[in-house]
Length: 573
Image (tube, rainbow, N blue to C red; front, side, top):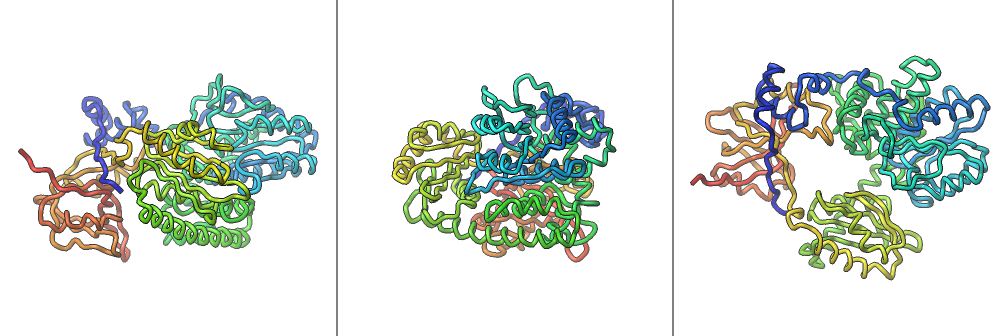
């Protein structure tokens, strides 16, 4: 990977000082808040002390009344209701949440998740046929459906009504659904636009509970699933999502549903009663195991895990997901190694894009491999593999480059494509692969700003090592939960020196022991920085950018630096 560009984030010093003064805290906390677009005491209070009362009225969402009335009618008339969702974490948590809630009051409720390889993403014709064959007359689509014009029209022709609960950006034309719950659609006055698919499902069951005068626990009991969806789907953890994640994490750490508890036990992360699960754990421990079900086999296993009420049975189901994830990691590792070897042997690293194809690569892992290759060479990346008679691909982009638009400029070579700014998928015929590789490279080369091919580290604040103490760390904990819109603060310190005991560990990483002027010695770990060890061992001052961590060892805790990058200290004129 090329050297990273370090960029110190701007902020209004006067606003930071005023806010810090009103909160009676140090300037640095005011600075961090202003950088997160928090400017007043009231906004800071909501940020640091989120309350369930801060959640918006679900009936502010366009079509919520229609959706509730249609579900109410279906229950009164004993219609069969099918809960339909995608095979990823957001989709499976959404299905589990709405199914578990409705099934408790209406036994004629079922669920369906499309098979990743036989049906693909979103509402499928096969899924609608399943609904018809099993006499379902109401379909509630979660985390999908906003662009399923043909499928929803087909369902309507079979006398199946559809309620769409989706958070993806709609096109100008909307499907002919009975009701559409999506804060991003035109004329929807719902105040918060960044809910996950499961979050919208949660708002639906909240509205139903309010209509039926049920206790709050009837819907709040699913907050741990909602938090999992928000973390895994990488939506902003701001506003309403911050409230949902904050209370969802509390539930995960005190009274999780059996399925999530089983996953935490198998992950062996929760080492003792003091350990508190955080967003990081949901993203890197829980989400991969849930996604593995759909990647390697059948996502229905994830639903069965999340709706299971018996812990021992949930543990057995979680073991299946754990095995799927182990298989996924093996595939991921081998495919990534093979892809990196191809780039090196074929001299592809000088190109502005990376497009690789091997017919034997596993379709369920190509998105992960695309992400790993993109992170290594920091180029728009597409990984292709054989899928039946077609070639299927997964694309990932660098920050600031619209990979969906780049694919659009190759549309005549593609059978189908779709996605977003940073991630997309496509299919094409085998005879078009080489032409597609060349066209995509030409499109990227002619349109990308070269500066976008240099990875960036955004630095929140410049501090001295002597300013790092337990008080600072405890205050930073108050900024959690971290995520998009409130990323974990990155600090920079200039002119630190090795005390002579820094060393390379496990070939790729650096274990730091450093100080700055008259500071105490600080320990740190820098993953995958061993290639820069000469900067540390030179005896000259160097700069670091880092997170502040707490390290537990043998029952004792101490602060350490999670070093993200290092560079030589610039000589002063």
